[in-house]
Length: 307
Image (cartoon, rainbow, N blue to C red; front, side, top):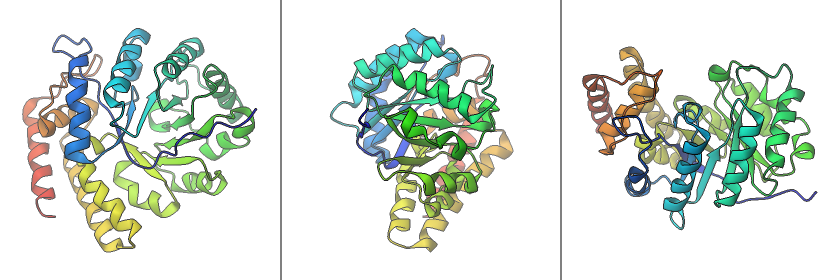
């Protein structure tokens, strides 16, 4: 089968939060201003939806379809890439979401490893990914590696071994792990048309040095303009400026972590910074106390104001 070669994903990709009403229902009306905010205020032109940041595993299949439709609709002719995460615990649900993403015109699909019944080997995980990809064979396909969340500690490099033969649509990797040696080995092994996207925001500069094509992360929702400057400085060989910005991102996250930083806090922080009404997280996550998010937002503004 001829390999699928989509437009290569590069630069920053915002892992979007899912807007919810105060009652916990999906709030589609907030997606249009969300897209506009990313483009106009952060300079972020690509998104990764229904992933970890988007609470994808806490949403129903139908909710994920409705969200994917709206993100694609609002991003059409404005965003460069809308990558839809379709991974589920159920192979059948993943395949259903993959077919749906293809039908609505998404630019790519991504799949996380199942994490209740875990694949014991890289071969088993590759077989799962292959079955999902086969449901939408014309869609650029990305493996989503996030061992801290899934508990699946297989090396990505092992998962990539021979993957293009099994998944002709394979386009790249969202690597949300801290093992830069594993990531570097993935870069070394990769084909020229693959996108190697790094997902630990506070370590991006190290991944760029390893050869990352871009980055997917939650903080790029509100730190995108700063991190775009980091990437530009790196491209120009100005490592001093790139390090300075990376250290600022780390300072913000260290402050947040010391207060207690999880997805609920991160979501409320995005609401504070952007003015978007993103609502609460879905249980079992608990809402973030407003003073905590406000404190982090103020610290963020203080640090970024020093640029």
